[in-house]
Amino acid sequence: MSIVKNLITPAATVIAVFILLLFLVNKESHSADPNQFNRLMAPPSKRNPPPTEDGIHDGPGASMLQTPKSAFGTLPKSKSGNYIDWVKALDEKKIQPRYDRNDPEVQPIVMDLNIVHEVKGSMPNVVYPHKQHTEWLDCSNCHPAIFVPQKGANNITMASILLGEKCGVCHGKVAFPVSECRRCHSQKKKQSAGAKAAAK
Amino acid sequence: MVSTLRSVLIALLLFAAVGGSVHAASEKPGSVYNKVKFLDWLVHSSPVSVRIEKSDDEEAKQQLKRAREMWEQASEHSEKEEFELAEVHISEGLKLMTKVSRKFKDQDRVKQARIDLYKQVKGHVEMFVVVFDRIADEKGGDHIRKMLDREKIDSLMATAEEQYADGDLAMANHLMRQAADMVDHALSNARHEEVLLRELSFESLEEEYAYEVQRNESYVMIIDMLQKKKTAKSQASASFVQKMIDANAKMRQQADAAAEKGDFEEGIALLEKSTDKLSRALRVSGASF
Figure 1: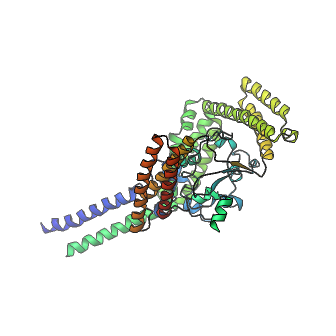
Figure 2: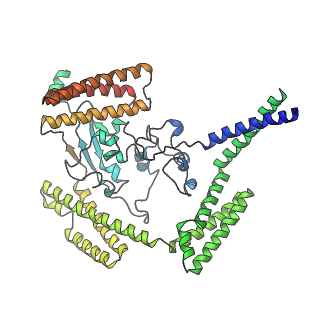
Figure 3: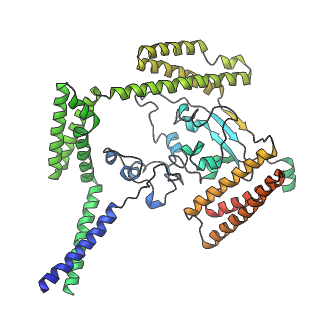
C-alpha cells in the first residue's frame, strides 16, 4: 500500500507541474484583432513578438521568418511604436527596401512638399511631410482612397485618426502611434501682435 | 518527507527537461523543424502542389516527386537530430518547388491581379493629371505646363488601352506605369520644396462649434485610451485626470445646452475651456506633448 502511495504522490506532482508548464508554453500572447488600434503601444514584454505570435502573419511560412528582435538589433532606436526610427534607418541606409519587387534599380519618385494644417488650442500646427512618406510609399497607397488630393476635401480629425481612419490607417498600426503628439504637431504657432504684447 | 523530496526533485528535473526543449526549439533545431513543416505543406497540400498533381505535365510531376523525397529525407534527418543534413535536403526541396511553381502560377489569380493593377494605375494617372492642371492654373505659368508632356501621356495611355483590349495585360500595365511615373515626376517638380498652408477658417459659428466638439471628443478618446493602458504615473495623477474629466463633462453639458439655444459663441468658449482641461489631463496621463 505504501509503495502505491509513494508512487502516486510524485506522479500527481509531475502531472500538475506538466500541465502548468504546458499552459505557460502555449499561452498566446498576441492580440485577437491584428488591426486593433494602437497595438504598437504594447508594454515592453509584449513588444515586437515573433511572426508566429504577432497576430499579423499566418500560414506555414510564418515560422521561417526572421524575428523582429534579431532584425532590429542594428537599427536606430525611437521612443515609441516598435521602437525603431524607420525614417532615420532609411536615411542612414541601414535599410534599403526595394521600391519595385521585381526590379532592384527602380527608385521612388520623392515629393518634397509639406502641408501644414492649422489647429486650434495650445497644440502646435500639424506638418505633413510628403518627402518621408514618398520615400517609402507610392502615391496610390494614400490617394485617393484615404486622402483626396484636393484642398479642403479631407476632414481630418483626431477622432477619425483614433478610429483608424485617415492617418490612423497606418499610424498606431504599422507606423508610430498617435500618443507621440509632437511628431505631427510640430510647428509652433506664430504669436499674434496682441499676444506678444501681453506676454511682455 | 522522502516522498515530498522525491516530488520536488522530479518536478525540477521535468522543469529542466521542458525548459531545455523550449529553449532548444527557439534556436537552430526549432527552425529546422519549422522548415521541415513548411516543406511538408509545400509538397503535399499547397495550391501549387495540387495544381501540379492535376496537370498532365510529367516533368513537373517528377520534380514534385523529387521535392517530396527531399522532404522525407529532411524529416528523417531532423528526427535523428542530424540538423545540417536536414538543412541540405530542405534547401534542395525548396529550390525544386520554387522552380516548378514558376511554371504553375495560378493564371486566374495573376490575370485578376493585373486587371486590378491596371485599373488602379489608370485611375492614378487620370486623377493626377487633373491635379497637375489645377497646380498649373493656380501658378498661372506655362513653365509649369511644360513639366508634363501631355501628348506623350495621351499616347502612352491610348497604346496601353489597346494592349489591354488585346489581352496583353503585362504590356498594358507597363505602359500605364510609364505614364504614371511621368505624371508623378511632373507633380514632384511642380511642388518641389513647397509648403502649403491649410488655414483654419469657419464659415459660421455653428461650423466652429462642430469643430470644437470634434476636438473635445478626440481628447476624451485619447485620455480614455491612456487610462485603459494605465499610463498615469501615480494615484495623485490618476485622481487629477479624473477631476479634469469630470470638469470637462460638466462644461460639455453646458456648452451643448448653449448651442441648443443657438448661442454658439458661448458654446465655443465653454468647449475651448473644457478641452483645455483635457489637455492638462493628457499631459498628466503620459501622452508625449
